Length: 219
Image (cartoon, rainbow, N blue to C red; front, top):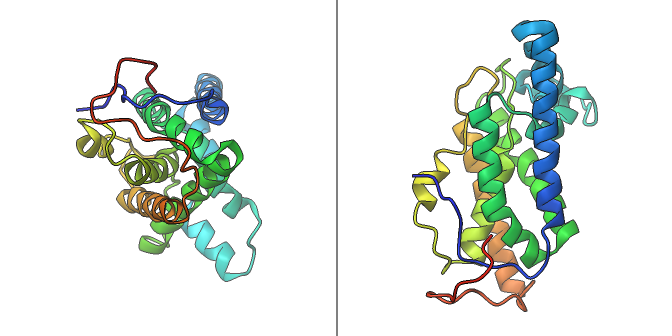
């Protein structure tokens, strides 16, 4: 089952979450244009250039090239998606869980957390399969981080399909296979960050929803 919404109203407009969704949708529209003009081969070349290629990242890190095209791919890859199902599924998860985490920790901190989560997810996959030449694409790792933080920050939120839905975040590689360790890495980072935030009381003014909240705006 895939979650459709949660009963967890926000206090303010989730500008960053909206912007991330908009960027991912715009990037996917660009992918459709590339495919229309240059075919599948053109899209594959695009993914190889802007996706996160573990073998290239490994080589770059070993040579000390920390800010080249290969490492930049860890950032740009989280805005790319391999199919309609991939982008729509990821954006649904980002819409449901990202807005509450953004509301809790603030807009700029959430943006930084999201990007770091995506990079951590890519690095997790690189560690497991350092010589793979298949590009990683998708926001799944960053969204998994947001999901991990959500679970910790809002443990009483009613999300019936949370666990089974996590497995439906979508493909993480350009060839359609699932990069499980990217999901795990992002999720683990989110849980750790969520625990730290709870310990230090960050965003504690944001009251958790009761177990049986009254009807209201849902995020």
